[in-house]
Amino acid sequence: MANYAVHPDVLIPYLPQGTELDSYNNKFYVSLVGFMFKKPASLISLSRS
Image (tube, rainbow, N blue to C red):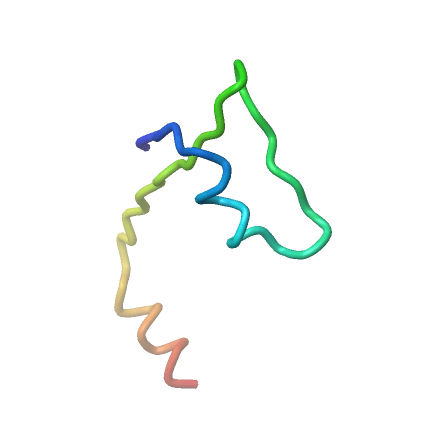
């Protein structure tokens, strides 16, 4: 996982309607979270259904 401090003006256009930004120590963060799929073949067969 990686966290980046970002100016709130960059994030506001991406917020769903009715939501607001939350801050931590007066900073706003974006997180990048990676996932590892151990059986991607099962995901492919689901997407073809």
